[in-house]
Image 1 (cartoon, rainbow, N blue to C red):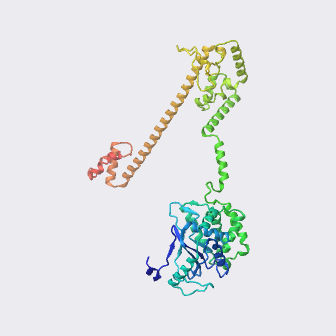
Image 2: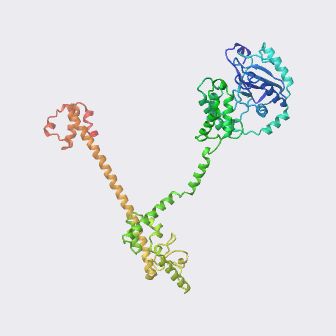
Image 3: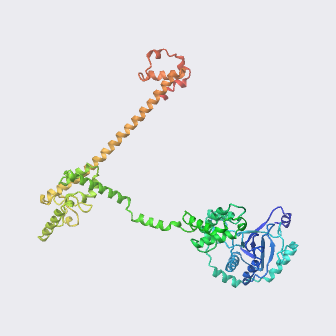
Length: 535
């Protein structure tokens, strides 16, 4: 960029800091509480706060016609921009100054967060001595300002400022700022809030909206912008009030100064009970509730467990109904068939046999069987480990000992399997045979149910297709009847041609068919050939 473009004054030019900086700049707006019109000693206090760092001399000029001030602190040796920004802001904050837009800003500015997917840039400031920018003396009065005078004062201040690098590193260690990585949407949200807040009051009737925006920025982004803890409760209210009082136009236009604390308290309660939360909280403000919900979900039964519980309830209800009507069979097979009438699958009955099988429902009989088994084992009976239930406690079935097959299963009765006996007194042969018959019958019933379901589905599909065909035919007949009533020779001939092929459908008399002019059906081969399409 050439000097001529800047001297033309057609545009206002600004500059951003790069990786290194050879000066720092402080910006004080005209409506700031630190402006000499409000606090004549504020600038002296600011300069005194930066003296420990070695910045003892500065240039003072107006930023524009608005009356804002720029303080330049040049130094001879370039330093890291982000280190310089943190050191300057830390010293000023320790001295009690609030670095906020519209009040006091530092350039280069500390970047408390990094925007994901976008280059992280320092804030830009205006170049000096443009329209409305003049050098000021110690009494804050404008003096004749040229580039040569500005350069002379710059070099004078630069030679006096000797930056203490050791103190700079010490301040960096003490700062311990936390840097956040935020999304592009969050960065836009912050910028939108800043654009509305920092302009301050420009007229009456703006207090409610400004307090709402201040509350949102303080509650959501304070710990990101100021590297502190998230605000809530009394600290949030205090920050809202303090920010509002420092904004431009507060004294002139805010009509709620007498109740500003009360209004800030109302806004704080409002946002704390809303869906907004501190930025960076992975679970939002409802973290505790979400954790309790996750624990409840973990403890809740699974879908399979719920379905199993519903099946067991149906079996219990069926057993209760059979007992009330005195229709509960004593035989296991008959009881199984009776429960099938309640639309309970055979597989479900097999899995939950502890609810309906006689050996499970009759505890006294079961205890008696166990006692007999123990006695048989004491006498040295060879089958003392075989059980007598029709269906085993485990999922597997034992191979019958003395079934009709010539396969022998010596010793398998001791492996935890169960013999399929109806009652122990019937003997092992009859028990095995009855058990096999029972399982075969159960499988046959399941297969019969599946076949019935397939047949029902097939019948329903055929019925649906028949309805569709009937509806299609009804639409076709209705359309052909409209052809006959239209009086158009082509449409009439097409309808009559279809009626001749399908007699008795359109109720067309044979006389009408004979009286049809032959030439009308031959006006267009495409019309006559559309009979197949209609059919």
